[in-house]
Image: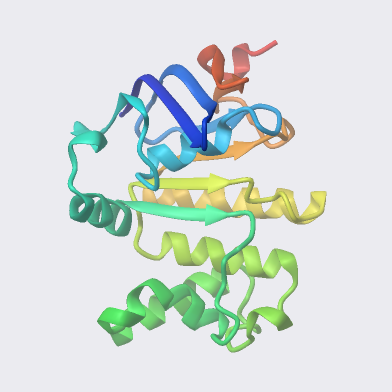
Length: 229
């Protein structure tokens, strides 16, 4: 369970204050597939970064599985991100000098990669349809293939929480639908809680939860999309 209680985020630019989030409260159930929906600039990504402890709220509290993110030390937040959270970004964030397999293993390279871990990364890429692209570098991969590598990198550690920021934003509709389908299948197998920021409603399915944000405020509580509209 993720609890967000009265969270406000203010960015200060000189004397100017920009309110990205205004007293946002919501809950995200463990094991759910939740979409944060809203127009550009509404505060969607800000909320996602706060859930992943990439940023801190100006006020309010976020609790993940009973752990208060605001009470964590910098070291504890780093451990939380490294061990429990898988991030998937629109821009892929792949390393240009590494192969597809080594990009999946990149978070583990500084500490050393076990042979079994390399096998697991390879098998994950094969499942994602990249069996013939394992040794290719990002500049030899299509946008859809690069995003599959990014998904494999996020899921290799079987994270409890998967946070995706516009993961299909740079893809065409066909590739976007395929990526979302792959993500659903793998995250269900891992029993991960998934939170996806998007402005596209087309990927939402019955049983998904919705959080709508506009101008930094939630416009409705999370709901099963079967009751939406």
